[in-house]
Image (cartoon, rainbow, N blue to C red):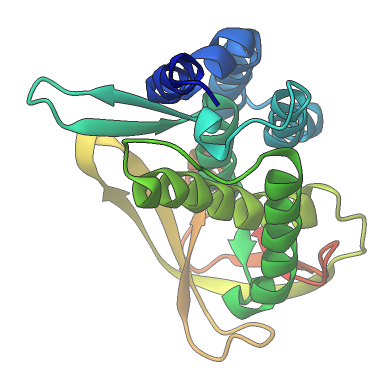
Amino acid sequence: MSKASRDRQQQRSKVTFSKLTFHKLNWLEYLTIGLSIWFLFFPKPYEILFTVLLCMPIIGLILNGLTGRPSIASLVEIWKDKDGNDKYDVADFIDIAAWVILLRVIIDYKFESFYSLIIPGTIAFAIMLIILFATHHHIINTDKSKTWIYLSLIVNVFLYSYAGTYGANCVYDNSEPTVYQAEVVNKRISRGRKGSKSYILKVTPWGHHYDQEEISVTSDQYNEIQTGQIINIDLKKGLFNIPWFYVE
């Protein structure tokens, strides 16, 4: 290889890896951001919005891979802050979708047991890694931190895999619920930072829950349900056998 060719190759390798990819997939990022805001603040139609957001990271990986199996670094935009430190920003069609799905899952669904998520979530994570490395090649030439590039991307893929698995487990669950009854022994409003509120009911033991416990509900449920009232708690099997429940 001639010196001129080597110089041109080195020059290309020094270009911020995400430029071409982010330019080509800007439309997918904007679509993901718009749908994420919609799903987060006004989640209707719920199943359709969830399904589309769930597909966004996979679509993004495949579309980006169609450009010729680019480097994994093409999924991470690297920029400098005012102090000159490198900042690593994962493509929005991955990280925005992952975080919004995670937030909606936390808000909308209640775990029966966290441990039942481990195996299905790990399988989903492994599948996503296979898709990632099948459509992109390893980082070869860069003057940036490979560790931070890999870490920032894989952490977001991890969050997406587990949140998406649990969300799909609940959203697509058509099993018949087992109904338990419990008495409301107390209720309270928990105020968080920035004025956020959580509405909490404390209920007597039910099902496999042998102690009194607190369950978060919507503001409407909180206002309708009174202390001493008997409520129905529906326990569902889950699409991936991850039990979850909700207050009727």
